[in-house]
Amino acid sequence: MMDLISLLAVEGGLAGMGAGLAAIGAGIGIGKIGGSALEAMARQPEQAGDLRANMIVAAALVEGAVFFAIVVCLLVLFV
Image (cartoon, rainbow, N blue to C red; front, side):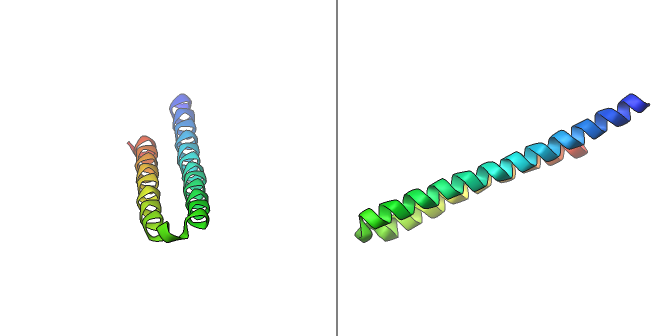
């Protein structure tokens, strides 16, 4: 009985760490996207509108991947 409880505790801890790592990865990825877009806008201001739109799409894709990772972690935790 004690082995099952300790296994569930470890599983919950690992799921929490996975969700945290996914969130950290998203922050780093979106920061790189934003920094690169700002650098490109500074180099070519006439392309700012297109760069902004592409930046938003890329950030949305990163967020979607993170939400998927967090859902997988929650499924591991509760199922």
